Picture: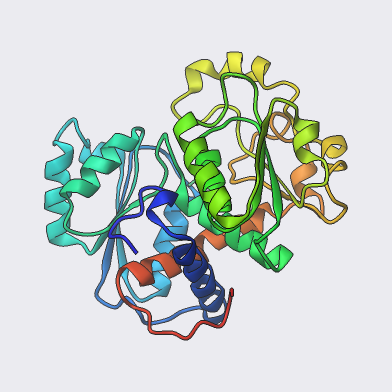
Length: 312
Ligand code: CP
């Protein structure tokens, strides 16, 4: 694997399969002393529940340690330049995970860091979420190859990482988004290249019903992401018609699962109560952030010499 994980495109199909396999094994094994005397810095410019806690617990369950750095403490790019922050942190810790407004901040951080940098969400991608999502789909469906995922809503950072990850492992990816809110062209072209190499299909539409029909997985995310609060009212109007409710979900396969990275806005992108339905796997997704990130940290920091027993 590359030194850093900033984008899903930093990984190969084999890397993703390896991480899922490791995560399956590590989920079964629980606590392991693999990262004794290793320290993870968690540096966030935005709020978080899942990402922060899952990284903290992942590191501790592997025998390592964490330091959380809030926006107020560091002032990345304001109190101190991004390259200097990277160079200083590299002298203290073994790995950095950062949540930034701008993806460019992450790239500069990684470019000047002597230790691995993991994207904990930027405006462009959310790779750890996508990897945990594939782990969840693998657990629920028993395979990834040929599984069809329908993403309903904004072509946002979560959609970007998911379309890349899905096409790398041979999953079919459909996305229904309003005009002007599609995945970025560059990401779509890259995903189409991956899909061609891995026998997957990509389908983009403005019509949610077309995307969901016969799908194995229905996935949605918030209409207004962190940092877009000024657009919330306008987005609320534009995305009306993109809510995942019982009627839309009924167009998917009978055993389809419903996914959402959380936090959810109940009554907006998801109908009230639908995340409590038997089809919803959102809390398994949230738990799998921790298992997948344990595999990622161990792989990046060289703590693993385990036989593959999970995903093939
Ligand atoms: N899904 C996710 O990244 O959640 P947090 O924003 O709470 O970390």
